[in-house]
Length: 178
Image (cartoon, rainbow, N blue to C red):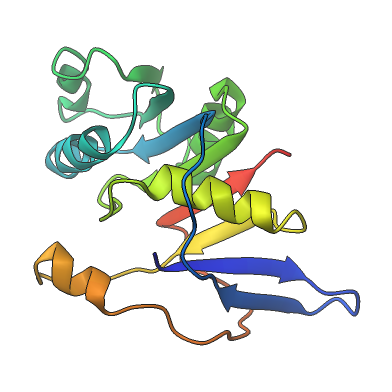
């Protein structure tokens, strides 16, 4: 399960490390938050994938950031999703903040409208990583841009060594409130 641990060291440096396999968890309290602006087709694909991979005790919240392309018509196709509409485009960061305020989970997963996980138990595994590493606040997921390999091949790429960096792409991540 490719996930990166982000840790703030005592000297102010950020340390990042890829985690080992995680075991399952009994109960989950997670919110998956997605913000979109005029990307109906991408959002539909992402929701199809996310909803296929989660348990019923994980909520999905979508922020429609001033959409004018009919994206809100997806509401009827995904009635179990919590929809928040912003009449004007307020930008991804502001929309995410407002969507996070509505999230009930102790663990918030953020995905771009064109990003989705590739393994079914990503929520359980991510929560286990947080539970095993109480110093963590955020995890960033590995990104495969434009990769059109079968998902099994993506997963076979495995986990690399630890590394340090000063930033991460925010198209897939998890935050703990604990």
